[in-house]
Image (tube, rainbow, N blue to C red; front, side, top):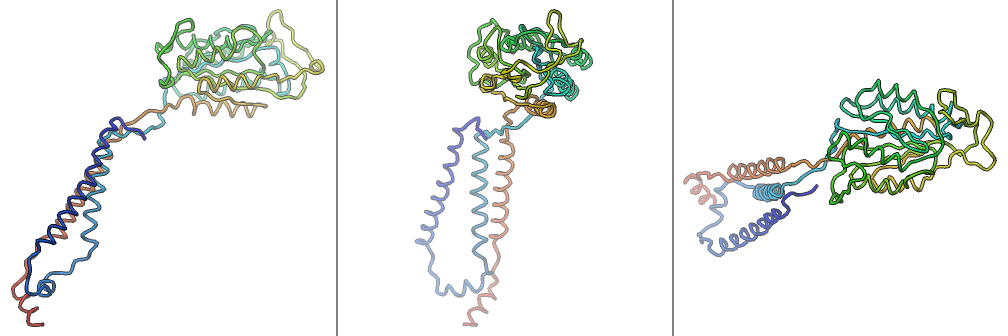
Length: 357
């Protein structure tokens, strides 16, 4: 909880001041007490009164003043708010290593299916774009809420050589900038955003390799962070040697990956630079996910909507404090008036008390 007017908390100093005045008044009343011939007569005539009845109104009054004082400082609670105005860019690796069959039927097909499920699961109003990258990165589908268009594009992916992760992040930033005026495109100097809240826009990078072409991923991550855009990298694949098989529809022009067998000896089919991907996530306040099979990839993508499409906002809750504080004060006054109401003592009662002695 934070406060819009923290200086208003000085009002709480009224509590020790009131307590001090009450203590001083009580001492003064004791010194100015009226002497009577027989206090027992007065005590016998007055109705019994429990000590807790004197303390409860005072305690409620102090608590009410404290709550009202806190409310005067305009307390604000940070709450999760679902946002439908989110732009998400899926940057999908289509390098040749995505033909590895360590994930059945191969990594590319598993990634296509998981991305399709992610697209179908998004709430109405969210815009999703698709970037593919190998040696270069390109925007395949600009951000849109047309689910059919995205699903159709996911079925047309083909492989190529190289892995340009950094370039994929920059391409995604420009795609977001085209639909969100609050995000500056790459090439534009951005300053004064440090400490500002992150946008609801995000980039999801799914890759099974390390950056081999173009811009360094950390440089691209710094560009995203400057624009308050989070990046969520997903490292996909296993460390087990497996056949490299893609069907004809997944093989790009001029590129023929392994048609069978296993990769050359010593080659790691999952050569992800996890340190670099983790650094990208840390720089942009995102999160790095590791997925070694189709189920883990589905789980990672399923978790993203709860992370991306939910933003945190500060909600003013001063009215709650004002209402509760006012209720406590009113209760304290009401109980005090009820329990301390003036009761007429009949003269006969005093006479009876005197005769009893």
